Amino acid sequence: MGTRRRLDAELVRRGLAPSRERAQAEIAAGRVTVGGAPAQKSSRMVEAGEAVEILGPPPRFVSRAGAKLEGAIARYDLGDQFIGARVLDVGASTGGFTDCALQYGASEVVALDVGHNQIHERLLADPRVRNLERTNIRSADPDLIGGVVDLVVGDLSFISLRIVLEPVFSLCQPGALFVLLVKPQFEAGRTEAARGRGIITDPEIWTRVLVEVTDTMVGLAAAIIGVMVSPITGSDGNVEFVVVGRSPGGIDASALHLDGVADAINAAVAVAPRSGAFAVSAAASLESTEKG
Image (cartoon, rainbow, N blue to C red):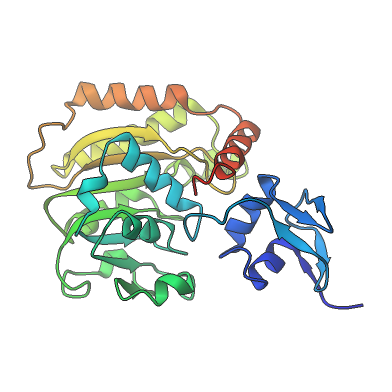
């Protein structure tokens, strides 16, 4: 008997998916077949010689995270902002946000992450990408990243966004556009996260953490342009949100007043999926339409 591997790992080994996260999304979307039959689980063990296929067109981005950023770009008509911009991607990981920024015309993306050996090889070979791995955003400075950036995007895990906002803003031009993902499971208290085994489904918690994050932004003199639910969930099924705004020092006529921020938060929470199962299903459906 030959070597057997998990299906998600085998998809990566064969070059059919850029990451296990992406492989798991493809499996959840029902796009993966083994021996011609649909595969149901990422944990399924497969032989090295078994026929494994992904149906449909290849993914647009190196990870499904690219669809989260693209959703915000479309919602707030930000496409022109990326053309020719130097972009900082905080928590770059595989590089979904980096890939999306490049596809929308960024001249350079500084891909910063505390981890290492994560960014997709296609991006690693792209001269427009400056890969800064093993780098904590809280210890970064403008010299390290080649000067302040025009635009910042971020998808951070295992840390509260509130903790890193000040160092992030210190790396931006005054009034730089930011598009930052808010993950309630990393903003809520440990007890709340543990209660749902890492899945936050309570709209009251979503609302509270969004208020806390946006209050911190406003307290640092940033301007909020919009708050939206992410078009897809996290790979674990968690509902996530996106906050769009401008860093301190700039004036934006489209910035929301405090009442407007509260209304935007309430509107985003109102349309967020209430069921983890529904959220995963919605993400899988979106993936199958070439969104990410």
